[in-house]
Image (cartoon, rainbow, N blue to C red):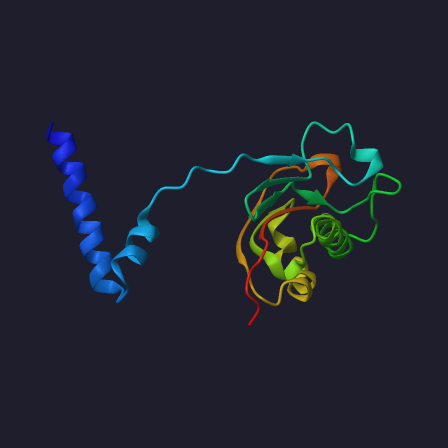
Length: 168
């Protein structure tokens, strides 16, 4: 019973705070705190014919949010890493991401979060030289180094994108 009173008290505080912070009509405030049933995820197959049997989805969609699998600097037409080091692999990984986004009617500007894994943290500056050309909107980002990446890659990048972001 104590837990129920505590929960009711917390709800009342949230409503009062919402009323004080937003000069809105009461029905609009209530709608901002109502709970919606989460949408079921959609696990999308790869658009790349040679990736149809991989044990993961290229993209998982929940509502308007798309969670893309990590991409390395692999040329998918030959299933080999591109030559040329960190800059070439970064460019290819980002082009691979762009291709997956396009498949789902999204653009690089729809990306809101990026995770970058480098094989060697010393490649950070060279990686950034390429990265900034693809993300002028500056999505949130986490970058770290790992001991080794799949296929001997120098970089792996995954992103989260949201469909319907208003453009400035």
